[in-house]
Amino acid sequence: MATAALANTDLTKNETLVFEALKDSTGPMKAYDVLDRLKDHGVRAPMTVYRALEGLEAKGIVHKLDALNAFVLCSHDHPHQVQSFLVCSECGMVQEISPELQEASPVEDKILGVVRASGFQMREARLEMKGLCKDCANG
Ligand SMILES: [Zn+2]
Ligand SMILES: [Zn+2]
Image 1 (cartoon, rainbow, N blue to C red):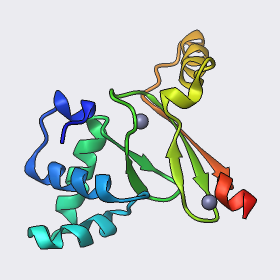
Image 2: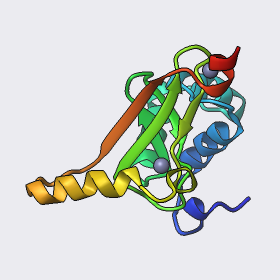
Image 3: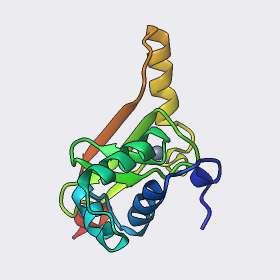
Image 4: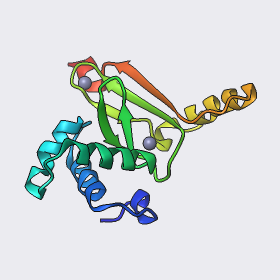
């Protein structure tokens, strides 16, 4: 198992467990969902999961979705400041807008351009676009 995000990053044992749980998940996971999954691995303390999630987030491997209070794996192969997500309010699907989806007009570049021009020192930005996914819109 080798993703680009993991290749040059050292993860703690617990971060690796949380990473694996998120990788196996089809959608975003709340911290207690992760805890539930890791009980078989001997992880019982919520703090252990929170710390591991924080660590993964700091390393740019996981994003936190504020509106859902849930976590997803990053779909990029390197940490990035501007994170944009499509969130379906019907089925809960979350898709990170990856470089392949952005094609010729990268959302990230535009936002960074505006921020740079204003002289603001941005740490990160997260866009959560809510609506209906293709399946729910057609259903
Ligand atoms: Zn990402
Ligand atoms: Zn949907």
